[in-house]
Length: 166
Image (cartoon, rainbow, N blue to C red; front, side, top):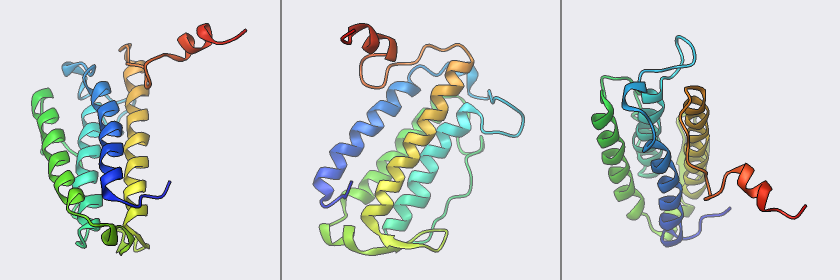
């Protein structure tokens, strides 16, 4: 997928974020500190990571500045309400940066924290892939603790199979 206009990217990314928000809505507040094993991201870390990487790595990079990502720990936001507010706040800050991009900006080269150079539009595409990757991890985490998660596109795999031609 090539991103050629910011006017088509923003609604697309809004839909990606809506799916993530639907999943976050079912996170039990008392499960934010759960991780599948010691030393791995907790559910809260995953949520803060999506927010901080979007804002402090991806948005800073497309704005022509170096990454200022410094982690995703509880020091940034602790407790369900604080984590969700932090998630929304950083997303809005990122969106303000993205909305200011022109079509020319999308073609401009940016330098990633790994010192790779690529067009801004490819870095935005990588950001979407990154969010989807961490959303998938959250789906697995929540399933591991017995939380019923929303289907991605309206139907579960079982519902699609039941409605398919036999």
